[in-house]
Length: 179
Image (cartoon, rainbow, N blue to C red):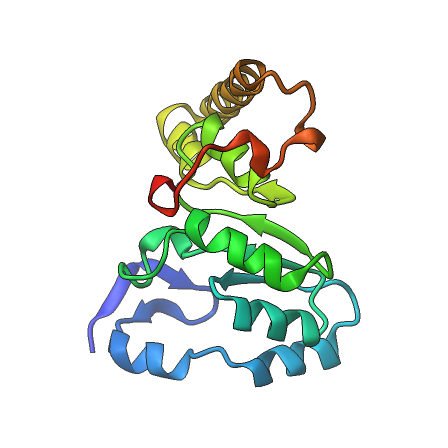
């Protein structure tokens, strides 16, 4: 088996290349894993990757403090729902029993505002700061966040909404296909 010379495991040397399918089949996360984590950790737990009401309810029943509605940027399975489309179903299923966060598909501040209107408590970003980091290091991250914040502010002003806390679905004129 070839070794990945650019990935060095301390004390072991270069990592061996493994059969990806085999590795993934051993890496499946189940509800039993969540119970195991809960037994070991009494603090708050956040579960990421929830896209349906049934899983959201189960996660809350298992004691999670927060759920991240996420399709992992569409990298895991390209046929799953966009996070924004799944968000209202998860928010309704949880019914305030846990915090709801969202990520995936966030490209501009108006995407953040849409997610907040649909019930997300917060919106996580990945690509924006990763692109900023790649382009200009720390200054690039700061600039990416500045651009997103300015767009959130502009969107809020255009909506006539003075507070993020006031955002709700009434600010959206939508059909399911809009998201």
